[in-house]
Length: 137
Image (tube, rainbow, N blue to C red; front, side):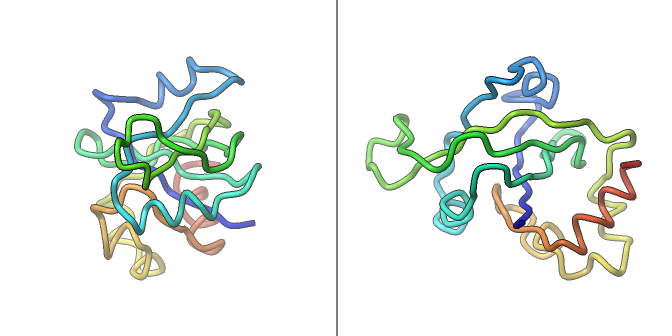
């Protein structure tokens, strides 16, 4: 199963807001980067992603699951971009900061370390296991 990381500014959409959306989940819209779009398009039902607070906190705080595959984003007038729906799965016992990820040599090739501005990105199985361990899961 592929793994992913999705970023959100907590002032716009936080982990708590994602949890409050419940089992019905919510859409992940507003992506306007082609690399991020390709990641969204590759997501399958049941794929899991790290929920990362960007700008404030800069940490992985939980895990979400894809509950609806890629479909058009109505906020995109160009019609080029789309979105997926996620539901919250579980919070991290301890948020895993970007600094902690950067200090872990086994994560030196992680996209988050090398292209930190990308809002949706793939995560390898090895990276997934290690970050989950760091977060107390």
